[in-house]
Image 1 (cartoon, protein in one colour):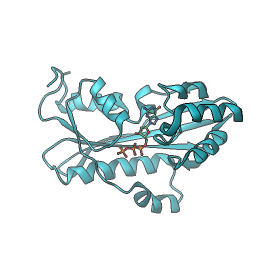
Image 2: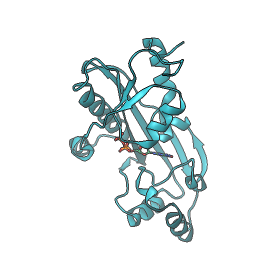
Image 3: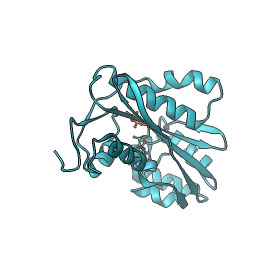
Length: 204
Ligand SMILES: Nc1nc2c(ncn2[C@H]2C[C@H](O)[C@@H](COP(=O)(O)OP(=O)(O)OP(=O)(O)O)O2)c(=O)[nH]1
């Protein structure tokens, strides 16, 4: 148990290695419990109603946190979700490398928004939510670059909604990035840690 964390370990309702790495790096004691939420099914009515990326991310983060909290009511649970929006169009993780190439061509030369929402729940009640945004300006990408990039990154392009990991080769895509690093990696640590200090699980 780390010196900063008090009480039972936080439950991370996520299968994301990026989110696990962020909590581990911050010295948070945590356990992982997948919510098994069918994201496409949960978001379908929202998309049909024209919801934007922020609303979809908040709704999914809440659904993941509450799904796990219902099974472990006495534990603090955090769920998260990330959406990518470009001029009102909400993107999802590319299903294959061809889709990743098409998505990168669409992002080329434009600034898109990554919205990372988190929800903290206990006893099936929402205790805290935050959904900060990051804005990333993609430089004009040549087709040759996109092909070489995908060949080098491989199937990791399918693991995130933007087909990139900024801490890796993804950094080559950008000419400007605004927003917190952890927001881009999918779990906004600054608002989460502020809440956990106020709630008493983290040493102030
Ligand atoms: N390492 C890394 N991961 C990133 C980056 N950008 C986005 N991601 C990851 C974080 C999340 O795992 C994923 C966003 O997709 P979701 O929010 O749907 O989460 P995911 O399905 O991966 O896991 P979860 O739904 O929480 O079980 O992309 C990045 O720049 N670096």
